Length: 268
Ligand code: PMM
Image (cartoon, rainbow, N blue to C red; front, top):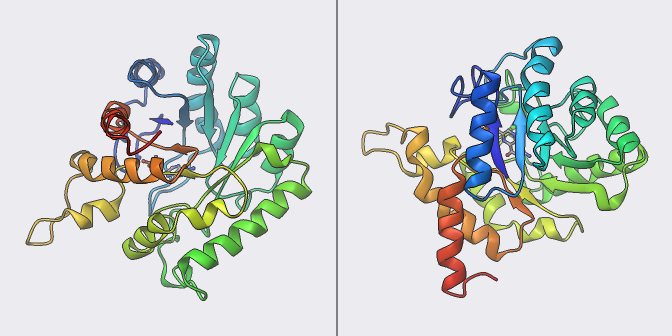
């Protein structure tokens, strides 16, 4: 899943693809590099981010989705808002990627159900402005078991709203109310999530825990665009464990890593 952030403020690529034409061109590039689907988002979810107006979010994503969908691309919309999800599906998106798993606005579950859309349920606890506050970082039963329990609650809410089981995808939500150590535990234990019985999506690309892993001796985080090699190792690890998709900024690098891993018989 290639990422197209149509935002002025995303942590890794904010502002680069903010104009519709730039976002569409970026989508073309990711598809040419081998992306199977594109995730189009108009709200930055980075820690500390403030939320855009609904009208602004719509104006960012809908024209990009319309253009790329008409060309035949498979698209998801990265949104927590029912209005944006609905407009995106009407414009040709097939998947709603809701990082809040329906917690930000439960109305989005009805939209997914009514349109028979694929619905990504991500583990989430709070909006960007507060998600890294201490009380959102407590995992009473350990991070894997607690995230699983909270995801199960959201899956139940999705099913109760009428979303079919075979339209549900789950995501442990790396970096969302998680410490770096939490993220590593979730990655290492990714197979636990398969036990819930749904396809698994993972987004690790360029996230801060990689910046910590690769930090300079003085503690300076590795810059966001220089975290790719570490991420490629994660991509191979996740492919070996059968995840449904990884959400990536650099599709070419991920595909290169997967090609080498496949050639070595590490993955099928
Ligand atoms: N991460 C971000 C945004 N959307 N969606 C899913 N399903 N999973 C993620 O991990 C995820 C997401 C934040 O990353 P970005 O600012 O680089 O897009």
